[in-house]
Length: 247
Figure 1 (spheres, rainbow, N blue to C red):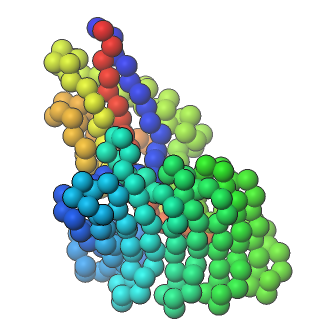
Figure 2 (figure 1 turned 90 degrees about the horizontal axis):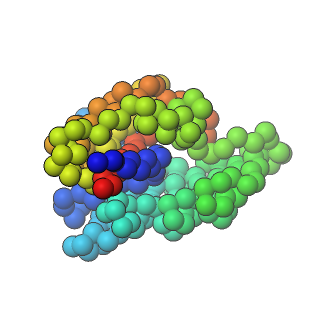
């Protein structure tokens, strides 16, 4: 019996929760906290219906001002990907950054502002690929461009990630014998130094495959941390690993 492994690169996705509304707390660098103590932000997730076909994630400053809002739709795998308008605000209510998502990737124009309301940046995307970018100083003179957001990655990029998974993952013999297959999803956070914290399985298939997926993710080397406006921050991913058997 042969096995087929489909490797899916990091996706900006999330799994549904078990309740219609969920609240999470984060520190200043967006590391997930166990509770409200020490939090700088909190996020409320609201589902559109009992089937949880879509959801809205709204983040607030701990003092109650809205900080960000993004809508998600469910994929065929039961995961969620961002779709449509996504926005962020300063604490004073001024729009900070606005963009559009299509099929889980930035598409069209994205615009960023200073807290004063003056234009800071324009970016253009085609399904996640940055095709144009401009930055401005607050006095409206041109500035050197740098992207609003850079996601965590292994040195060498997505190709190195796939090669790492291929080298590391072993389809458990017992799972093959029992014809266990499906998509295991591991959620984890890459903190502002590039280290992985808080990994857990959020979509289970079987104890054997779940354990193998978690082992592979936890063996991953340190990544380049995410940045937002050039400042390192924590970033939470869900990482799907599909195990499939071929007769």
